[in-house]
Length: 244
Image (tube, rainbow, N blue to C red; front, side, top):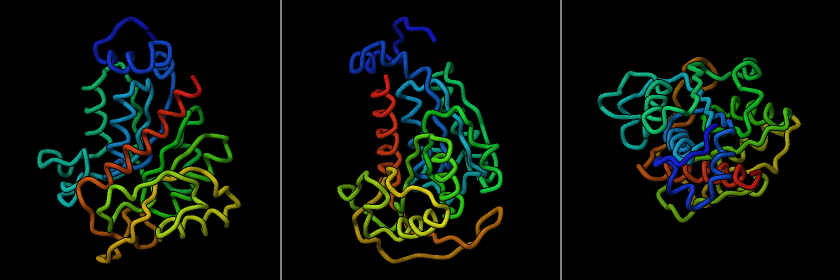
């Protein structure tokens, strides 16, 4: 990667120094899920100057996504989220190497879909079975991983936290995740983004495209998933900076 001055990275260079920003160009982040959380995480990772990004999501933009997802516009409805996110990243920095995985992540396909050379894995998917399998796979490989817990049903941005899964509270998704990871003999002390706000009611159960049990669908507000995604990206970037 080149280290010459680049207007795109000028403000980041001022903050971190050119040696650190150059090291970010050699890093690879895998992002699973490009919804309200994952889409903002992906953009923040790209704008920080990470040189390689792999995006995984099987879904297309739906009209119901317009209230919270970065990829969701009226002009993008029914188009693949991976495609929209890739275009945004390449419009930010065409030198970023973007790899697409337009597939549903299943426990039996994770080893093929998740790149082994990823420096960090961001889990922003909904299916509890797939979330747990993704985290367990990353841990088995020795890859750093962070998960997003439930952002739905909440409106308080000051309640968002980063901490070990084992220490979460007031989060039904985190409780399910702990149970599932114990069955997989996986660690519970890895970092997650969660909220200490008591979730509001308004949950529906809908079938999951591509199989699996019906998933819970909560009401959402525009800013909370974005805060979750940016918080996850911030944790990843800080860790990559520390490695530099």
